Length: 424
Image (cartoon, rainbow, N blue to C red; front, side, top):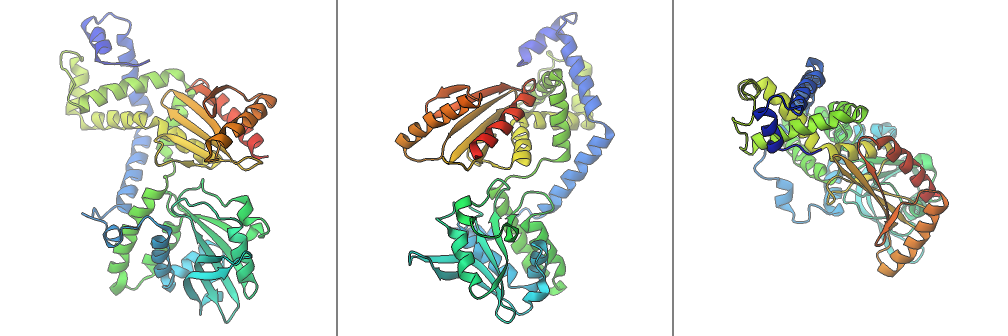
């Protein structure tokens, strides 16, 4: 239910109205959820995030230097520069489970050319190779979401493995949802493929395991320049992918999901804060003690703000939870939209749009041709009907909707079955 100040005005002008209890219950929820332990945890997470962004630069030097900072080539140039320094190379090799002692005399090369089977030129983004020990690491940079060309990684592997032992094929991605296409890696030993996320706010990404550790390994007199590079590059990496759910967001999501009424309580808190933040907080509407607590007690205002901001981001929190379980990605252009690509005979695409109290699933073909999309949609529709997963049709999409939080369990069960069916 949506609460606004007209509802609250009725509550407070007639204090015997039953609806007034909703405000009281919301205040009780605020204090019961945000315990000292959770507030401490939140502050710690905020401090750690602030440390990662300790420099608030007026501009990003990497963007200024190149209008094409968003391209794979630009990222590969930066990564090559990092890996040429043993301070960064050694932790990177350790991170991908490669013995860095085997690469003491290695070269780090950009755009290493190969000849494909069709005599068309192909280029390996970054190649780390030791001529002396005949070993190599191939890095394919997909930071900017580019797809794989036909048999791309297999061609690279075949070309390099003719003369070198390939220790690892690194697939560098912006988000955990970006994975190599089956046609690209078919025929490569699976144990050689390592998917590495550029930055996701966790502890096992390229930035944390290579760049951050590399900074610590540097000599004091050279740290400043590298630190500036690292901080500016982090800003760009952050634009490419999403961050993981914080522990407090997970607690919030689970708490809301557990009891339907908690969603109404947090919605009311968010409405109060959002209107206050816009300057629409009217004294005559609100009970005096609540107003004074909110304005004069910074701790109370911080708590209201935290709950309000998490409620405002509930769609995004739900999308991140889905991504952490099933992979896929949160599209930068779709807001709270989670996207996963499935294999199978048809290149399927599943978009899930999350709102604070509902979920809409869109199933379609990845084909760019409208006629092919329509043909594929009929195949998808029949497949869904056969497996009792069909909902409705909206244009070229097969759709299914669920309410949050009461149907969240059913949503996850449906998507488990759907992804399994589409991936076969």
